[in-house]
Amino acid sequence: MKHITIKIVLTVWLSAFLLLLVCETILTVTVPRHFKNEAISSLENELLYAKALNAYILGESNEFPEAADSTMSGEIQFLPLDKPVENGVQSNTSAQTGFSFTPKTDAARERREVIDYVKNRPTETDSVEIFKTKTGKYVYAVYSEYFRDEGYVPYVMYINLNRILNYTKSINYVLIFFYVAVSAAMSIPGYILARQIENSQETQRRFFQNTSHELKTPLMTVQGYAEGIQTGITEPKEAADVILQESDRMTQLVNELLSLSKIDLHSLKPNLVKTDLREVLYDSLRAAEPLTESRRIKLTPVLPDEPVYINGDEDMLERVFSNVLSNGIRHCKSEVKITCTPYSRFVMVKFHDDGDGIKEEDMPHIFDRFYTGANGCTGIGLALAQELVKLHGGSISAYNDDGAVFAIKFFYR
Image (cartoon, rainbow, N blue to C red; front, side, top):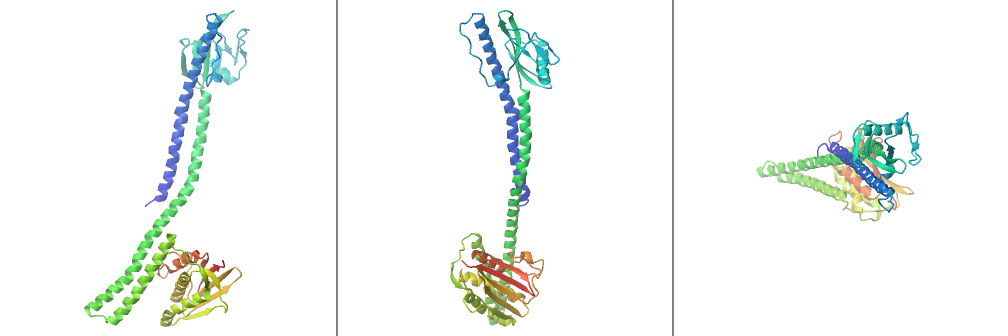
């Protein structure tokens, strides 16, 4: 899975962009169209009301009409066509119309635009029409209202949709800001998740490469000695010893791989019982005697006289100590010192070898699976030890102090 970080981040931004596109479509197309239709409907209802009111005044109907009640009735503006609009003021002294106001400059300009447009263009009476200017988009209708003293007076009713459209534009800006903010915020966990996936993929790739490499070496050795026996070049007893040694090495590697796999699947559970750490350490030291004798390595245990009890899985703890001890034996010069020190809340077990210590560049990766150190060695023993210690609720660390020191802390519980 190449470039997964870029893919996930792009997916986040693209998903947010598609959501923004839907919202923008609604705000720029659907909403204006909806309000335009509502404005037309409101004006049509108002025209019907005006006709019914004229009929009532003329005596053609005995029923007083109910006022038009539409969604945008409150936005309708009424202007008599025979009254001038000058210097931002339009006046009507008719007591019957009661029409007299002094609007703001923008409102006056709006009214002048409507009056000028309607007067300069023949418009069908009682017909709803639309026109647009630089400052407004108007839905309007021309009608006549009957007054007993004045007769029919021409009026224009209109709704300026520009205010609503400007409001939707403001929402658009908010949405764009929201889109950028949300996309940026979502990109952070997306990037982190992608990096984790990439690291997991890379770890898995290295895991299989190193596993095949670790298994290939003993297999090639076994194959070589088997061919030597077959051709009579190698002594059978000598070959058998090497084959058994490499078989044990492969068995140990496979068992460690299976244990790590079970840990990753959360299927490996420790069987916690009351355990004396001293006994487990002594068992680990006895198991390492053949290796120390062949290399003339001295193991120096410094353990307390009294039992040191914790709740632990004896098999897992012995594997932890054996793996750390084997690492110390491989890198020491002549001695590995093992200490077990109980404290009030925890017990500390340390393995201190007298080797050259851990190289600075290897220190951050000392517990990584199959990490290839500066000396070219790879393995999973320390990685497995760390996982098993974690299953016991403890911790393991490494540092240099006249050699390498591995400190394992177990808490009483």
